[in-house]
Image (tube, rainbow, N blue to C red):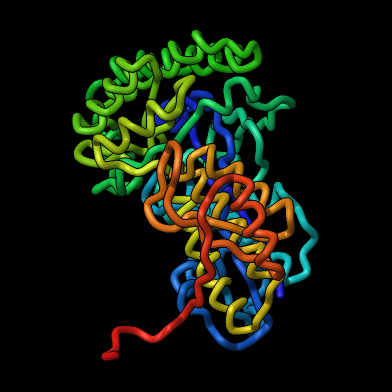
Length: 407
């Protein structure tokens, strides 16, 4: 079995202008897509369309006619249609996994070259920035000089923690138009109004260079100014719908900055917004108001789903160690979601320190009491002692009892 994973990506700035030879600054995001290849004749249903695109590219490069029998399974944390590079992640991870399956030496440049060919099938005229960032990781400077010449530089520094902790992604929803359709639309507009668009692209290049300096200097004020100016240009290019522009204005009015990422859309949802605010809860509140989701929360919900499935197995197997791990991990997610007060979290930490596990049940609360805690310990008297020390009532509860019945 061979398993390869690839991260999502986000344009810090430079999408669209990068298609016309300007530089872009991109970085990877901690959402991953995983491809698993097994030596078998069974064909995974998830991967049939991917295999149709990827296999001919590899065959041509390696000058081979057939592949040994294999199955390919794909799982992903990256939302599709959000402009986080989900198709590029599929291309990169699938190609890397298949090359490894064929015992080809690990070569990032080769993986990137073939992934770009796959992206051309998906999108028509991609810049190559998405696949390059996903392959090399970190903070990437990308510029396509011509069809054969690309400047791809993984930068020797990262976004300082002072700034990186204040970025948040919110998902406005999948755009109605595909990336290919958007490229075709803007290409036609460029031909009609080339002077206008060239001026916008030139300004984006200037902003990308200024953004690089702002990141290196940890200059928050300048960072916000640049993101706002870059978004203004994207709206002038015509790739941000009025619906999403309203959300961005709200974020700006609250002291933050936000921009579309990737191809965008002319109407309705535009995919992911890259947002910045020194207090990310401000962004989260705006997202809730406009009924759009935070990527942070989607990732937490996905992890909870995984834990629920693992809990089912742990219960069936009577695996106490795994049960404790899962309850602890689930509670950690609930605290990250923001439904467990600091008061109750302190009690849970004491139970964990004593070798047990505990979690809130139900809606929880942001302050004070949160209702019942479900606790587990091989010696329940330890839980009872902690409850008494914190002046809390406690009671034993047998789980899985009979439903409604006549007495």
